[in-house]
Amino acid sequence: MTADPNHVSATEFGHVRLFATELDPTEAAAINAQNVHRLLGEKIVLDAAKVEVINSLVLEGLGLRNYLIQGYGIAETDLAGKAAALDAMKGLIILIPSSAFMGLEQALDPNPAIRFIGIFREEAARPPEQMPQTASSAGTLVPPKSSAQLHSSDRGRSWVGALGALLIAAALVLFFVL
Image (cartoon, rainbow, N blue to C red; front, side):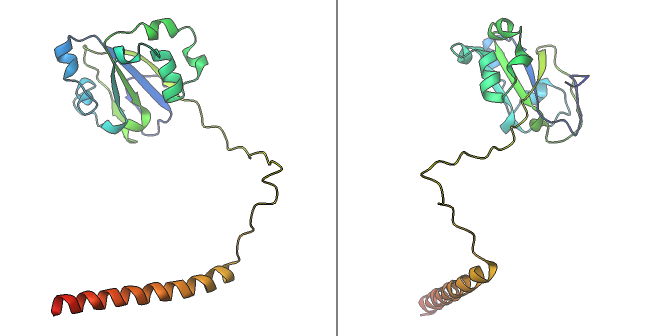
C-alpha cells in the first residue's frame, strides 16, 4: 500500500482507491464518473472510463466486498475483517483504480463531502500455465511454415489482390468520367 493515500505517484500500479459519500439524493444524482474528479481536487486528471460511481443499492445482493474481489481482483486476505463494514456502506461508492490516473503524479485534495475508505491492492496476474494435453489433442499442432514457404504463397495472393484493386479503381474512374 502507498504511504499517503492522497498522493498518486506516476508509477503507481495495481491499486484501487475506495471512497464513499452519503449525499442527499439530488446531490448524489449529479455525481458521475465524468465529474467525480471535482470531488478529489481542482487539478485532478482522471480517465472517466476507468472510474466507477455506484449507488450502494445496486450492490445489495452481491455486497461491496464480493464486488471488490470479483470485479477488481482484490485479494480476500486484503479484505479480511472488513466484510461487514464494506457491505454495510450506504450512499455512493466511488472506485478509482490506479490506471484512471493515467500515469500522472497527482495530489488528491478530497472534498469533505466524500470519505476515504481505503486503498486495496489488486492481485497480481498469474503467470500463464501450459494447458494439459489430452489424448484427443495429441499431435494436432501443425508446425509453422518456414519463411520461404510463407513468402512464396503470399506473393501470388498479393499480385492477385493488387490486380483486383487496379481493376476496381479503373472501373470507378471510367464510371465517373463517362
